[in-house]
Amino acid sequence: MSTNRHTQDNVITPYKDAPARTVDASGVTYAYRELGPKGGIPVVFFVHLAATLDNWDPRIVDPIAKGRHVITFDNRGVGASTGQVPDSVEAMADDAYTFITALGFDKIDVFSFSLGGFVAQALVVKHPELVRKLVLTGTGPKGGKDIDKVVGTTYWDMLRAALTRSDPKEFLFFNRNATGKPAARAFVNRLKERTVDRDTPIKVKAFQTQLKAIQRWGRSAPDDLSTITQPTLIANGDNDRMVPSILSEDLHRRIKNSELIIYPDSGHGGIFQLHQTFAPIAVEFLAQ
Image (tube, rainbow, N blue to C red; front, side):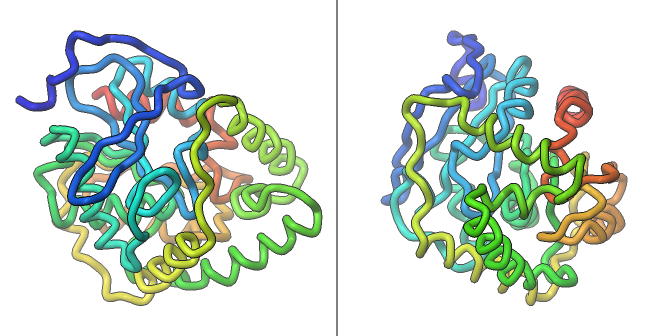
């Protein structure tokens, strides 16, 4: 089994110190980080719109990496990975498959958030044999109602953030209330814990192409998700302005025997706001 290629090196590292690595496949150099005990089935993290390796919350990654080999990566054209961002989610899934197989894995668990959840769905529909378990957070199905409105919401919140000199994620991921505002600041500060060897920020053109792909995904005919038999955990906040929370319920209906968690008084970044509650659930789900 190719999945046991790393049994000798059981080093556990916090995500802020995880070494930056690259692998070349099909003319693209993919940037990735890995941590946790190697060997066994890895958990591959699929990141959100405009995000790089530096956008994963260490309070989610580190608990999972205590017992599992964790891999985060920049898909083609994002961060330190070379090439052009594709303008469809399906092509992003093809690139993710290229990356995963280049590392020598034939079975993975997936942890995904937002756009990463779209890519994860496209991957599992096309390569069901690759995925053992699926975590879908802050996301929705292809053709999901109002997904195509993400573009307008994103630009509006980027403007609001610029006017207040804050991070757009504080507006996009969290409620602007007494619970959400401090959670947003805490989250943004956690993303700064890594001080050395940080990733290359996403380029404007790459970000715009991702938005185009999201719009296309939202306006496309749905995939038949009844074919997904993998154990699936779905989570979101109850007030997701980017990928409406109702779409998490839609996913739950479409994927047989999936588990659904909707956190009250939280938004798109509900799993980050409630990381102390959510991380142990994700760990247990992936360990079963």
